[in-house]
Length: 238
Image: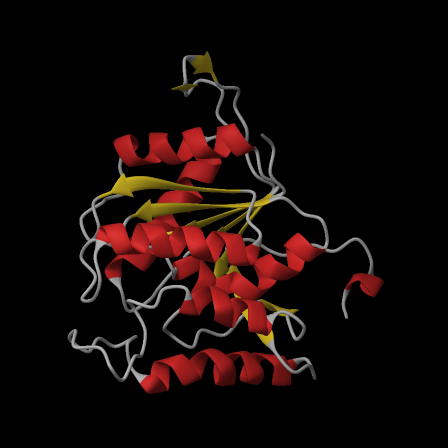
């Protein structure tokens, strides 16, 4: 199955928080979008891996994803080595996306930076035909995505570009709130974590408003790139 966009997240909910509205917008435009979670988030302060599995499935439905997979790497302990790169390469060659979205290059959670570099490296390696992979008994052809974009997470990183998501921010919020075990609930008896506060939940709105302010729109999501952006014409910029 070929996808237009494949988004990777170190943990279930990373993609929703980082670029959920952008994904909802692309789906509305007829794009086929998939998500691959690297871990099940089993080290999370709240909830459990089993709960996160169910929440990720619900969020996928809200966003209108074509497919969602979980590679079940070890939360907190996966590394950027050949073993893990090969598993990412298999996903890239399986879905052959034009665009890959992945974690922030530098962020508070160590898995975000690790996941970012792992996916970025695998995207390059996936294009090397002498790296041989098999999936479900079938030999895979080499394939390299055209671009890799990194969504913004905990840190307020200056974006290289932003996407107007004014009409889709409500879908992002719904997808994020599908992870009810992870976020603010005044009735919860679980320990408080940095993302389980009322302030963090409110930040989803005001950070998107601030990015939208930069382009004179109501809401936006920001991305960074590792290579120079190119456009076909000056009219491509809104």
